[in-house]
Image (tube, rainbow, N blue to C red):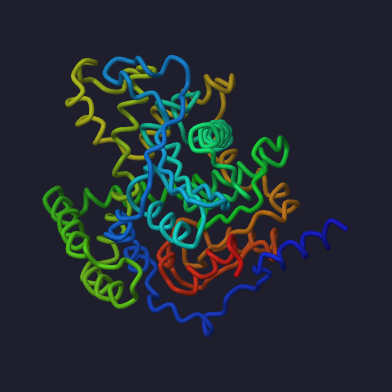
Length: 420
């Protein structure tokens, strides 16, 4: 009976699908790194800024509002897009370090707001604001605990929306991308057990399946800086930023605009694109590291504690691997009461495998993934599809989030939450 119920729900959602065959998918970019680069301008649309949104603040953890140098910053900051009539509410959570005001989050929020939905963009747990205001461990990155912290923030958000704006959603959905998708998978387990929010649908786009594998890839590409040399590394970042800036006034999901962008990025080598992707994923890491050391100083920064500028500058030398091994893992062991926990096992416990059975039994959860996503092993993609069947839709191309703008993908995402 459960199986037939799951089929009925998925059919009703319009996503009872097979893997998308390459011959049927006309996405134009076969290089996964170039495909990924096309997402670089999704936060650039001037129209995004014209969509009315509110800075929403919800109470943070006790004691976090008066930490030295961070006084008055202990609330969780979110972006809220409000409809004037009763409407569904969509929570959006983007990838590592993202904030609610720039990038993929506002792009997706604009799509759903224009389609008639309330939207709240959550900060990534790996964002400094979340670490300060909502992370109980003070060192986010351990997915089960991050999801618990997110769940608490979402409940506070709903209370704030009801009390301050008289918003009573007709339904609640969750859209997570990249690391936000992995965290959303764990949220689905919590809400299935506790039902304090009642999330009706989860769409999870390009979740990292094995965090340890993804982390190794990012670290490998970060270390390309040694091969490129400091001057070329800085030059690459400047060139990439200059390219993105030239599209600041363009419509970010216009295929013609994307094609012009792709032609500019096509001038970079594969290694150069890999380095730029790693730099992008780690671009906000230094702020997170600074905040973790204000919450609980582990003496990993040598600059004086009262010299914010020098400590932030020093934190820029840290990679994601440095963060996990030198900062996060020691604090997770303490927080979890498991002082001998193996670092790799902690990352495995943060990945999708431990909750795969729970996802399979929850027809509210659907995953969109790209077969050529370089942050996931091909065998892991195949195992995911085998385990979850029609709860997974696979696209042959797109790299990591590189097809969010593509008309077919955009339509699928909108239709999942707002059927025509």
